[in-house]
Length: 289
Ligand SMILES: O=C(O)CCC(=O)C(=O)O
Figure 1 (tube, protein in one colour):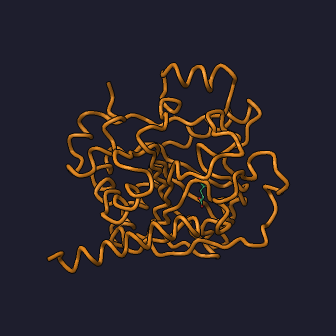
Figure 2: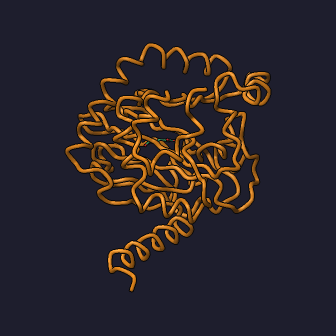
């Protein structure tokens, strides 16, 4: 007989998969215990401050090439080595792994991890879909793209997401449109959308969505930073080399045309060895060679 807990998980995974397919995304509750979410938020805030000089220089160099990146009042983090074993345990939550496997197929893997700090009074961002559908990025899937789940995104909420704190703005069901406002289309990327809503949730919840879903940074009207970690998932067959520093695919497809890109840092063998066993396959391709 199948244990009741497995039946419950099967139903839950079915609901996640269906909701992502129909609505474009879903909030998964309590992926991280609230006290650990608050410790991880502190890590992201401290690391943002340490990395700020470098990050600002990188963003400036991208803007100097004429590309649009980020919005005023947004900080980011790219290094997670010291917290990766803990984070990886949450990322291999059964609900996420089973839903991602269902949507992307076996051997799916992590494409990027990034920390996000939206400071009070930050600027609203532009409507876009995530890589590889963001048309401002050199390594994009050109619109009109086919109706296939090709990449998944998630936002781990480390502080509260609400209409006050700047919970991400989304347009439900927009993942079914074969284009997004980061490219040429008849929708103003900077304007309010009649169907927009804020993603809401508590520290430790995760917004899990099809990367095609239109979304934008919302204004944080609160008095404390809104902190999140963005984690994205790719099927085994999607070329992630374009995000690898020093790889010839990145050189040809991105750098040779002065295109906009982003780099996914590699992880050390030492950090990889410390990851929980069930999370390792998500990271194997990122281990330093
Ligand atoms: O910080 C947010 O609410 C949205 C982040 C975002 O736009 C992204 O990760 O692409």
